[in-house]
Length: 139
Image (tube, rainbow, N blue to C red):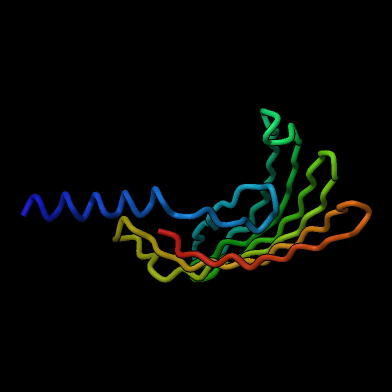
């Protein structure tokens, strides 16, 4: 019985280690899971700043700000970001979460989250737009 638990745990760890990274709602910004709110809902404001540390990351500075609403069954958020590098980028994104399992009596919460992201890049004097639609399950 213990060997079966070990194999199951090892399989989960291996699956998580080799999982491919997904692009976030904002290009060059990390993605955070949307929080669960109470029945009346909670409005929140978020901001982030980051800097690349080496030549591979482009030594770029990035800034983002957003506003969202966390409720008992559905949460949503909109963000705007700016990446200052060799090619300055302005990016916009929005995401929504549907909380499937959010009972106070259980230590686990499960939600399905999806989003939309847009960025415009200037590459070799041409304007290029990138749109992405990430979807995930958050545990």
